[in-house]
Image (cartoon, rainbow, N blue to C red):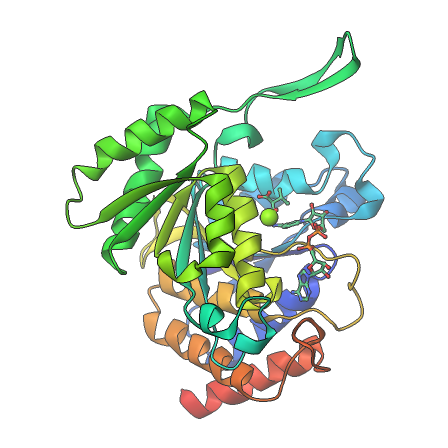
Length: 355
Ligand SMILES: NC(=O)c1ccc[n+]([C@@H]2O[C@H](COP(=O)([O-])OP(=O)(O)OC[C@H]3O[C@@H](n4cnc5c(N)ncnc54)[C@H](O)[C@@H]3O)[C@@H](O)[C@H]2O)c1
Ligand SMILES: CC(C)[C@H](C(=O)O)[C@@H](O)C(=O)O
Ligand SMILES: [Mg+2]
């Protein structure tokens, strides 16, 4: 099995290093790792944030372990050269339309959530975010208008795009508490009207799943008022981006949430996918040992589960992380003093006592 490792920028390499340490501790047989440049570092070295060698490496792998991209020094570059284009390019070129972002409360962290502890404890949800469409991938540009320069981005979803992500979400709900909340803005957006109609049609095939619909503004409010009501949240690219960061704060920190981006391609042992923390390159803390590697380590667990068929090891990593968080090893994001490396070491220590 081949894993393409793309650490990227800022804290990306710092947290990816800890995931790789955890992977190494598992001593899995027949695993080959390849490392590639992506993001700002790739632009600086090769003149492109997603060099063709990196894309080819990702395509040739069974799974991609991704850190984060984003570099303030690249902010004024034209869009096609900016680091963020690399992750968007990987998602679209690799057909990764389904982004799974689980958010569950960790025992012992309830007091660190901005929510009341009993609310934080009740969080156990999965954001299923469509990842290949929406305003992210519509036409965009700049034009002259009566009010001066005007930036514009076209938002759209077609039926086929909504159908495939709706199936992903209904199937996920079936394996969980069988409740699906589709989040849109159908009171204003044509995009959302098509979205909602298609989701209602697909629901006929899943009579055992309870479906409801929520406007995104209400969903954002409900997420902090009563997050325990959510099981699976199905939503588009932009709303899913925002709601998942919000869910991470409700759990305690953005440094805790992992993600899997999946498409249709199957590997020998599962589904090809790209795995990354939901956070970015965090330039404000990069190089200081302050990054929480838990999101990256849990992304590795998702990789083992979805792409390599290693459910046992995935579960072991998740238990080791939970045990670490209930102990007194906490990073700066959770009010502690442990460094990135110390958190990684503690997870490995707990993993060894489980495995
Ligand atoms: N998938 C990705 O690669 C990805 C995701 C989000 C943002 N970005 C990019 O990252 C750059 C910074 O964006 P941003 O500041 O809006 O978002 P960010 O997620 O990088 O950081 C937001 C805040 O959370 C903190 N934070 C993030 N991850 C953390 C961790 N693991 N441990 C502790 N604290 C953590 C940061 O210090 C910062 O204060 C931008 O260039 C952005 O485009 C990339
Ligand atoms: C960096 C950016 C393009 C990306 C997104 O908006 O999808 C990020 O915020 C994420 O959540 O992975
Ligand atoms: Mg985001």
